[in-house]
Length: 263
Image (cartoon, rainbow, N blue to C red; front, side, top):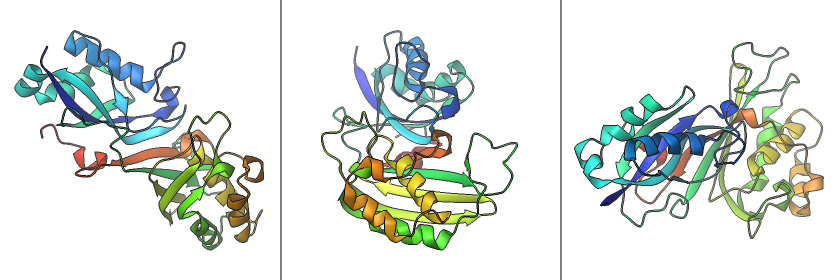
């Protein structure tokens, strides 16, 4: 069959899946979408993503690529948004799509990934957003948290924030931006990097919150980074506060494709 490579933006509620990656004995976002794609294509659908998300982590704009029928794509690009979404269960959907070159690769062509971590900072939890934030009932000093985060910007060995089981060949990563803002009871930590290690964002957030709640001084963060030792960092922040928000490519980003169905 004549094939067309397409890039799709997917959104999903991480609490419903055991992560993005296909697994033999657990539900994954990848397998769920691939099953729907197979029904449309009539042949096995396979997806390649810009990055993996852990069990419980959400995605607002994760980019994936797939090879589909060129004829169907030319006749109806909406088959890969509206058509797929009719076959998908609640909690996962395709929000945008475009044609890409046949050699495009969602993972290897991605030049930057972006995540957001959400914290609910109130003495009482939220009844309606329980699985959308990490509930931190102690007061967080944002100034201290911001000061502590600045040592992470740049290219560093992030072994102190690398979980056991990480399969990356090197712990060297470049964090390009970290911002912190508060809106009402919510604190948002946005992190951009060329790539991330296993649990890297959640481990960073766990340590930043240790600073923000007074457990560490802001200077301690730099000491932890330089130690290159995971045992020196704080506990891992919960998965349900983390969101994959954007994948950046030389000529577009995943968030820019949301709502688009044609090239």
